[in-house]
Length: 69
Image 1 (cartoon, rainbow, N blue to C red):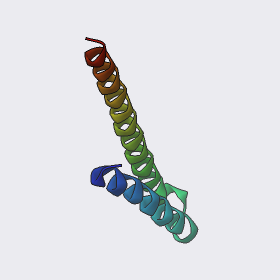
Image 2: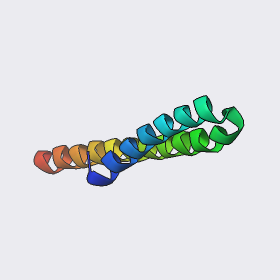
Image 3: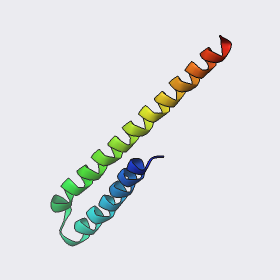
Image 4: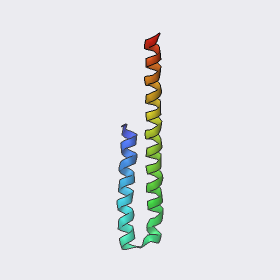
């Protein structure tokens, strides 16, 4: 996991905590954008993680092909 991935995951978790606090103190209408931002960042993290897995699998496949030659 790269540093950017760790930052995205941590930021998403922090926004969930902030959103929960806002829900308790101010109500769901003010915390809704915070939750949506947290979910968007979480989706971005998952996208980056899946792209990295696909890239690693392609590199392994290329290594196997080169070994056979």
